[in-house]
Image (cartoon, rainbow, N blue to C red; front, side, top):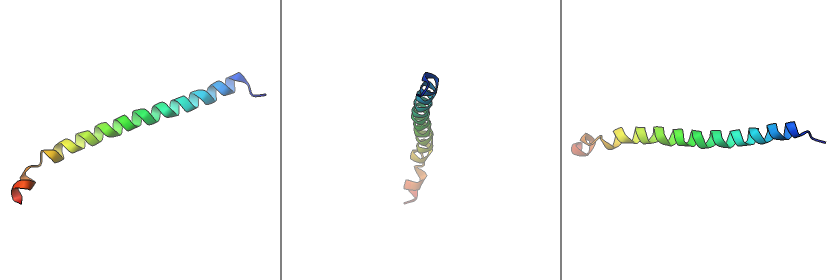
Length: 49
């Protein structure tokens, strides 16, 4: 029979992994947004056309 302690550790491992994935996706989205801002401000490229 599996102990309650090991089940709790496994559950916390799953929850921690899901939280890490969500936080990581928000961090990646934020860095992508920061990278997009300089690209949108590069209007000299349109003037060169």
